[in-house]
Length: 278
Length: 100
Image (cartoon, rainbow over all chains, first blue to last red; front, side, top):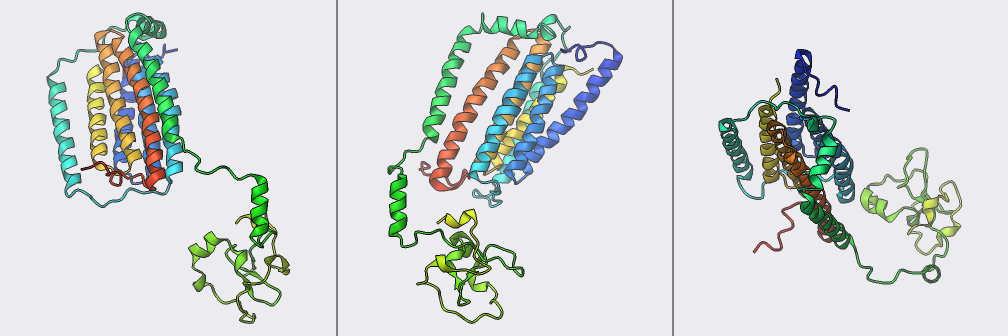
């Protein structure tokens, strides 16, 4: 599986160096972009680049098992979970650039620089030796050796891990659960409410004209007036009905408030599947 | 020659970037992503040290870190969803009811 990764020789060394620098630059750039990008979805995709680069770094360090776990768990599961929640929360939600704490960005940058200097000093003073002579447990025997370690020396942490995972699953279910406050209306109750509302038929469809090819145009009643019921409430609130251009050649008809909407024939009377919503 | 020092240096840089992101960003989901970046950087250091010392314990620890991170993401995102459902916002500035 990892023969090509752990090959010895000067050519393989050059390849390793090239792969390292390309992926190191890519991952650092992606991480910086993640911090700087204002759109959360861009952050998630840049994080995917970092995680895939890290998987290759694990392979280069003789950890093929961790590399594939990284791809499966992080890039496959965790990032998809992030994207899923992003879609729930709202994909267009951009970060506000207003500082709630004055000077926070500057202090955060200073803290980051200080931390970088500190860690660099520590790492620079540490004696980091060369890569060990790759024994078999860093190549083909990696999975076997890891399993041996996990199920002997680390068996108690492993067992505790299972409790942690169960707790996390139950906690997520409890947190995401929403109690239903009122009983779910049955079909009979829905039908009774519909009859009682005075409009048993579906609402009329919108009037779509060749001039204004949009569903926020109201349908026309037989006397030429506009049917307010034919436009969805969401559209009429969002688009501002006062600014709609007057329909040419039509009499300034009054509000068709008392008229049943079901008797609106003409070109604007559509019967789309959305007509029944309200 | 790609030595473990290369990977340690890279993990330091990634960790610092993640820490700055946690401090700077306001969107709670992005803050979570930056925490994940910090955990990944620590994992890279673990794996590099495991190779340096020719012992697999570092890889086992990195594996446990991954498990804990997965559990943390599940619970954290569930909390985020609950907060968003309650107050229609994912910003960490808006969840300040327990501040004082």
